[in-house]
Length: 315
Image (tube, rainbow, N blue to C red; front, side, top):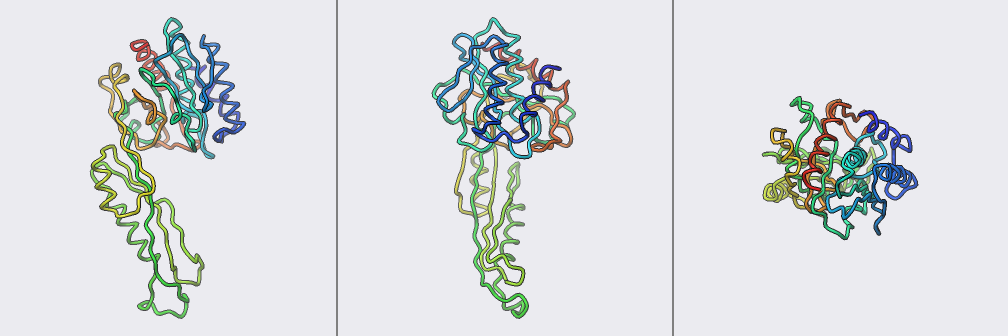
């Protein structure tokens, strides 16, 4: 699969960080547009800047995104677009569309702003986790994308002098927050996950007992009931939430014996109707959003074959 890897390198050479609607993301879309034309597709863009390469009515879509986080590797998002172009080039007698969505990483996501509903949307994506590598399996079928709840919990204490206030006289907001952080971790059971990834401390001075601490919480589950229970158990103010999104069976029809996985990360497939997802084994312990992100040429080759088969059944 030399061409796919070469194209991934070409995109990465534009810039490691291709921010939403930046010149770097624009350049990646221009590259993809050229490759779509070489695959015999008619190129167009919608009002959100999403790039489409279409043949005929093109009611069956495949693709992903080309923007990236500041610490990105080569595969996240870009693999799905390049694999879809490769598959479309093999299926020149089929009516289908390849799409490169805008701004998946930082929004406003282009996939949220589409105005038409495809008959099917297929997305190939690096796993971004260690499950397939641990299982020794190259590909996995995604059954659902986990719902997420994000919000905060605030703790109020009293700002006192760190040297003169006896320990038993203190109201230390950070100590209370520390106990809560351990509670968050202990609350994530039965396939759920919960994370405290950011805290804000006021006045944030070495010699002052913390007066106010704000803790950011991220809770996720592929089961809506479990997510609601997790939020209740943790006890925090939800500021943003998405429901779990089940995935279709387009890839399961091709790979009936492949491992079934839940995606804990969000993807464009959450917002495109009739979506199915295929994960490609992520090597190096499943690292992602990092230059060490890696999928092998052999695994990518298998993924493109499976995508081509799935598209040929649908288009």
